Image (tube, rainbow over the protein chains, first blue to last red):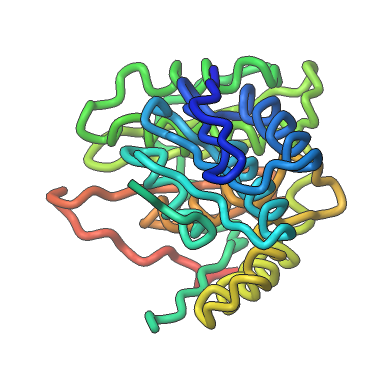
Length: 103
Length: 187
């Protein structure tokens, strides 16, 4: 899995484009990266999930930990282009209410 | 406000989901790095109609992961056995060589409270409870696989008495039969 910073505008927030599998092998690395960034100042984050084709419970757990960290800063994790089985997994795990879906 | 739905993990040693007659069987060592390979291998002959994109592979991987990571604790000497059947529906029985899922009742209680918070739209509580932390959990565990599994395995998800073996079934719309309710009346 890879991720790319699309935008790092401090007012509008950071946009991260994800590509690949957000799974038990890759998701921990991604969440550690984002959590460290939140610790040093990121408070608005938008995840572009268009390139994510596979997401499992570890991936869902990563999104939860990021959402929890942002909640402490009064912000909500934003996502866009969430579809297919990753969306279905988050729906079945009741994680969708934690996310703000945007276009 | 929608209906409050609280499902439960059930222990039922004699449940029909443990009847392996006619099922094929495969066995794996407990290699964490190969969990998704194992799922793909089990599903090699699975009809496309049952796969739902990669959803079936994902759900089977979760069960295999639970057996290898939590059951066998990634001990390479311990084996994971998978029985599978793709006739009319998808059925699996997965057995590890661990001590069993001791936290099952605690997880049911966690799930009930989490669902109640969601139903009440109490997102602070829901978020605070969004991940389950049992005595053996680590940062990568969240109980989310079981939350999703209880919805996905629509014909039942049953543990044996030792709790080191789980039987699951998923029925599909348009199949020849309606999904039966999981048999939880025998103990």
